[in-house]
Amino acid sequence: MTSRALGLQPRGVEVLRRLGALGDLRERVMPIDKVVMTVNGRVLVRLWVGAAMRRLGVQPGMIISQAEIERALRERLAEFGGTVEWGRRVNGLELRADGVTVLCDDGDDVDTGWVIGADGAHSVVRKALNIDFPGRPLVEQFLLADVHADLDQPHDAACTWVDGYELLAAFPLPGDDLWRLMAPAPAGFADKPTQDAIVDFLGGRLRVEDGATIRSTEWTSSFRIQQRLAATYRRGRVLLAGDAAHIHSPLGGQGMNTGIGDAENLAWKLALVISGRADDRLLDTYEIKRRPIAKAVLESTTGLTRLVVSSNAVARFVRDRVALPLLSRSWVQRRIAQKASQLRVTYRGGPLGAGRRRLLPGLQVGDRVAGPDGLHDALGPAWALVGPESLAEVARERLGEVVTVPGHRNALLVRPDGHLAWRGTSADGLRQWLDEALGRPAEVPVR
Image (cartoon, rainbow, N blue to C red; front, side, top):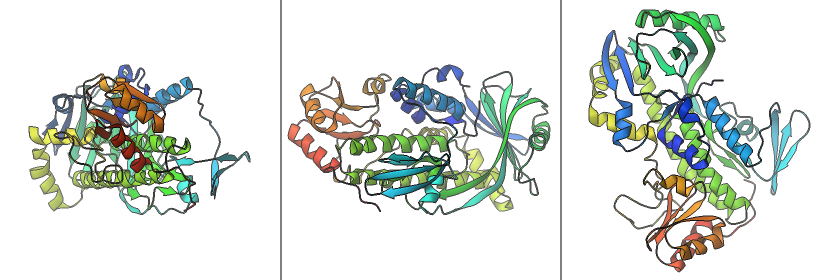
């Protein structure tokens, strides 16, 4: 069981842990302690990712297949009585003022109040709504293979070889000498290559760079790397998330994690609207806050991809003599770890945080509430009031379930996604924030 997406950053781990969906994933991962980059036959960079993450006070991310993460989420969903339907294709949508009809290929259409289109880069939902998906290709074709091979590399290191504008990457996977090989296809490569063609090419590159030979193959795939961002994330009662809303280069390991971030930001807002506790305008804050994050990820991963696989001689000189040597500096590695972890994602400003004064040094409305290892376990996936029970009762009047975590009289209201919503001591102040942030429940116009 495998998939193209492979890396779960610390923020993604935290989300699964808060949902109670982490399960046995920690035991099924391959720990990565370092990234080794060899350029033109010389080791130029050693990124000590494990140490950098630990210096930030967080556990490193996971090298694990998206398929394994989906399995863990399905198992958690089943504990709540939910199921996933397989083998049903969506052909289109019909939008109404009070709901959406999902048109299925088996004729058994579904009437529902809301739809989230999380159906990938070729999203049927996005196309049915005629939402533009502007962007451009970055790499014509990228090749992947999970293979058994005796690489002359430690099994706790992700390895990258750059030779001119050619690239080969190898990521260790759980199993007997199992590795994920990745490389851009050469010009003129078949549009729909066979497994043999993919393995022959990657195996040839591996022999040149490492001297290893592929013994057997578990899985292969190919895809085109593009950067695209949907023109809008919402139309009426339909919203887009994940690859349906944005796609980018896999370099940097941010794709699956950005989709998880979309889901956790959207879920609590939609839950409040569906339950009649919030005006539907709350959903507009989903795109307001998540779109800039997706745009920043597109820009950073595009820059990284062009840096690594550029065919321009000047760009390669800057890469080999300036950019890559800088990566060996400890302060640069700390910055990379901070950005890659996604733990510094903030939702400051905007409709849910505009005009709020600074609360504590470094902590503002919209920031992730950090704390000891057990804090997010205590908060769980619900609203939480860190403070007196009396203020939690006020929050429950509007929010429903609110977990109380003992704390000082100066309380923190923490959103289900772990970000700070409000801080104070006054029940009237809390009610005012709830009224301003959630508004009055109302019918959703079709837009």
